Image (cartoon, rainbow, N blue to C red; front, side, top):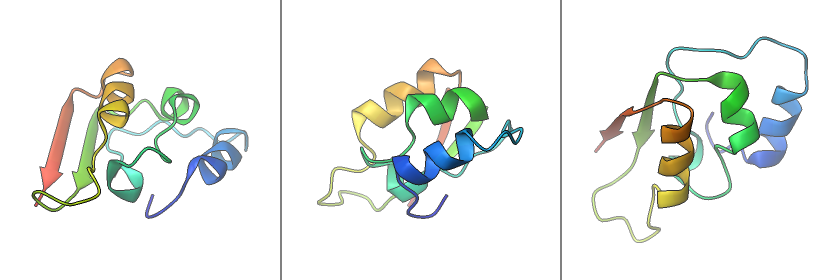
Length: 81
């Protein structure tokens, strides 16, 4: 997902394409402007790697993003340091 934000996710979610995947690399390090509920409900990832640095000053990933991932059943989140 790179640095895709909710606008890019919305375009993908509304494209009519089947977006379901087993693994979704979480966009933009798990910040608040990506991994929207609407997008995740279409994707339904089982595993969600999140690339972050230890103790980063941005607070990534956000607790809101982690909560949205958990609500769609992606309880196996991997943090790449």
